[in-house]
Amino acid sequence: MNREQAWALVTEYTASDSLRRHMLAVEAAMRAYARYFGEDEELWGVVGLLHDFDYEKYPDMENGGDPLAGSRILRERGVDEVIIRAILSHGYERTGVMPESLLEKTLVAVDDLKIGRRHPLASRKGCG
Ligand SMILES: [Fe+2]
Image 1 (cartoon, rainbow, N blue to C red):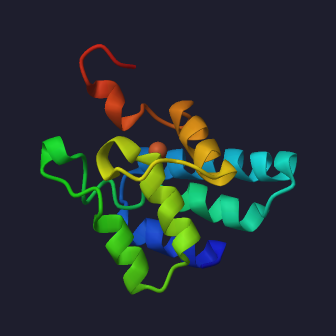
Image 2 (image 1 turned 90 degrees about the horizontal axis):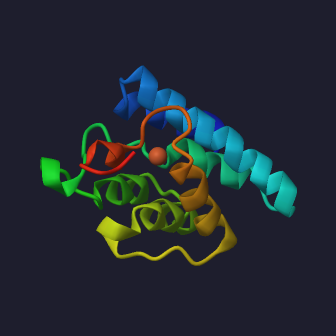
């Protein structure tokens, strides 16, 4: 999946400007870290751009959501498993997929910076 396809998916599933800005900000940070680590900037950027694309329609389980919905959508569209696994691992508390690769660990770290918006978990008592 290239950036144009990823952005089309983001805008198809996410209407919120703040959530779109968050994904764009995480994309920018992921691209910067890919350059820093000498990794695939396009791949890391697409992972950052897509990482919350399903959150608006399928929020946290506490709110009736489904943490695996996004992965099913991506698989139906033939998205590479490297991208799907990275996105699943950034919600490891909910998906059980632990971040292992540098790509996956960087996504968790970047998302935790809460750039672009308040983190989805920040509304929990005692967070954020
Ligand atoms: Fe996020």
